[in-house]
Image 1: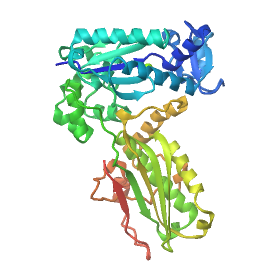
Image 2: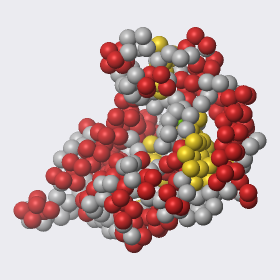
Image 3: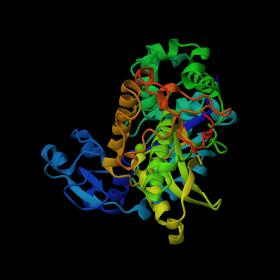
Image 4: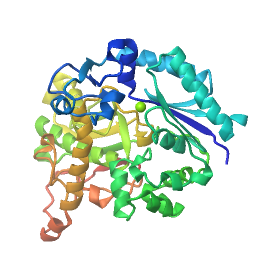
Length: 438
Ligand SMILES: [Mg+2]
């Protein structure tokens, strides 16, 4: 099969740019920090620092123990963006860039004779040379060449720094067997857990799974696409899930028709939506909040976000939106509240926030742990403070747009069995709405 894709990944990009700009940093362990403070962590480290065993996101104090002469440099986002643009131009002058994956990573399409392995390798060497000549010798890159963009990305991660790896049909899956499933773009912590639940923990096991099994694991067509890509077929990059939203709404029972409780219910709905977001492997680019009042007036507002699946980031966004509500609304009794996560993006298309602080990165693990606790021990075993007092008020509803996943819903089965049905509260609307699609 022809080699249709080339992926290029810049090694230790931020630190390499700093070394290019400041010759006194060259050849030395360098850490890039968001602010110059001992309590922070490095958002990026130089190749030399990696070779000494330092890891990205390590706390400064720990990094200094391993490497006392680590040079800390405060991040200069504009400089990195400037370099990024220049590099994309240089790459484009060699071969067509089909996708900018992130600030230090792009994929290109190989057409015609460039799809022949020997020529593709020549092209990759020329690109590396051109980049070092025109952007600077510190800008080293790892290039992967493969039958499609996904495998090219995998190949670009296989040799660092300054790598050049070709994956051909005959190399599948042999050359990948030393990798783990999570080394594949798009297999994040949630997917990794789902694979493990199905007995897939190694690359060999992943390759042994059938297309139908992939479809089940990914809950849809994306699974088939992943399977076909992993087996070398050339498919276009995954599209963004533009039209999809994840939303929950709730009609408030009479005792909760006040400001404080309405906000608590909104937080609970948000936490539930965030859990579904993570479970679907999606990131949200905007949060919409709405309130309908008893006098039939309505308020709604939206906030654009740096794409996230982080409950705390979403919680802050909700509080911000709530604070933007006109003051006069405080006197009205809220009747129905709703939240909606929109501008959803698949994990594979997600570009990590450039200047995401290390502690936000570790929060991914925290949320995976929280989701797992809630799935294992029943809903709301663990929840965030904003929803306190409102955890009972977002029961499972089945809307025709979505089949709920019981483990993500509000039913604690053991408790449900013990309890008799509650006496309906007079005047309490029973209608509820849940929107969204997986
Ligand atoms: Mg990189």
